[in-house]
Amino acid sequence: MLIPFFYKLREGGMKTSITELLTLLEAMRSGLAGQSIDDFYYLARASLVKDESHLDRFDRIFGAYFKGVEDSLADLMQEIPEDWLKAQAELMLSEEERAQIESLGGFEALMQALQERLDEQDGRHEGGNRWIGTAGTSPFGAYGHNPEGVRIGQKTSRNRSAVKVWDRRDYRNLDDSLELGTRNIKVALRRLRKFAREGAADQLDLDDTIDKTARNAGLLDIRLVPERHNAVKVLLCLDIGGSMDDHVRVCEELFSAARTEFKHLEYFYFHNFIYESLWKDNRRRHAEKTPTLDIMHKYASDYKLIFVGDATMSPYEIVYAGGSVEHWNEEPGAVWMQRLLGTFPKAVWLNPESRDRWDYTPSTKLVRELIDDRMYPLTLAGLDDAIKKLH
Image (cartoon, rainbow, N blue to C red; front, top):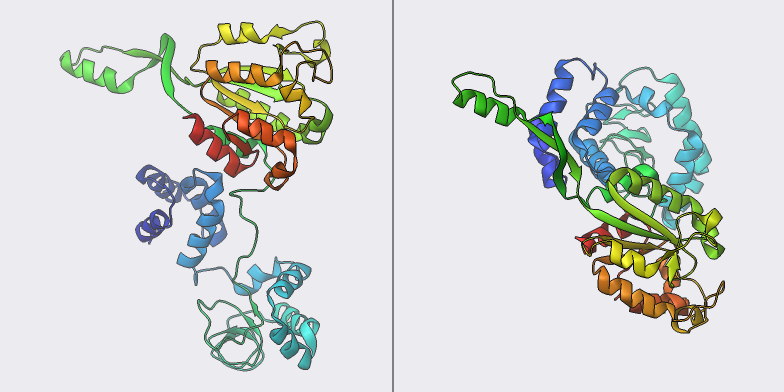
């Protein structure tokens, strides 16, 4: 049963490997799933899903493949709040379907009857016109006939008369525009990886040890290698203050995730736009600044440059000398941006503002032009696109 399921996951676009399937099999042999389909679902999801953006895709494939082997229907459905069912069902009804329901007592009456069946029924039922079952005339169940009702446990529509399909999954995907969290950001940032072994050789290289020992006629020859690290180097520049106060939480989560994922991470702060200096400590930003030229000379061109800011400001702050709101800048911010991009060609701008607002802000248009349209929204999909550009 698991081998065809494995191929269904692969056909569905998931990159599940044989190693993960073997991990699931080993866990099942150890009795971790028990006899519950819920326990098996969580175990399979933990073993087979390596990218959180694929959780919804896994759920759909799992539900389609294992339909019919669920736990007791009554027990399963009791866990779903009635007000949730009502809210979701009303969204799915056409005007014609609502008229049909109202003519027979209304949606409230139908839901109340379903709740009563859930409370009273204690087993499987086939035929008949009352209980939740199959091949009858009850308004609740599958493979029967009723002018309108709630379809439960039936793969496809037959008479197209159900006013509610219980098995349908309608909720927002994790893939794109949901609010980010540190864990989700880490998953996205892991795509920006290039491993290398650096430092002292202090880790056992098992394969090489076995090979050298065999070549020495069984005389143990222990081989050590340096630890593997993500060799990608990141220079992170974060806009702080003003309009960015609305985005503090998501920027903190991005900063936290980046510090965890990248060994070679350098960060600096700026306000609104880049000028002749940046700083490390916002509490001492007027006293301790780092010249932008020093940053360009200190860090090699293989650093990936990531700006994080809403790009919302006066256009004068970008294109005019003296345009900064906090000090007199001798040269326009646009000049400094061009210098940075000349030093660090792999660069992107992450914008926490919604993309649909960008065209209505002149400064955002200017920044996009300066950075060759490499501005991306600070969402999971935006991070994916930005990372592809940085590779």
